[in-house]
Image (cartoon, rainbow, N blue to C red):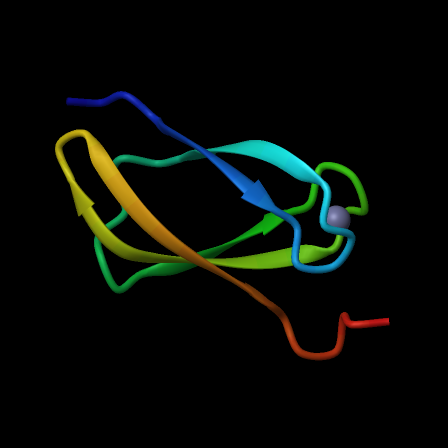
Length: 67
Ligand SMILES: [Zn+2]
């Protein structure tokens, strides 16, 4: 099982909706940074739950980028 998960998210800065690909090697409890495709600000992507065909994520702003 090496397929990327695709998730639609709303940027927490500019609220644009776009799709991200999540590495299947990530595990629940891990987080990583993905830049918004629209405004390029860094978004913290937290993997809340992950299993074979389902992933739950939480997105957060990174302190200091909320201008
Ligand atoms: Zn954005």
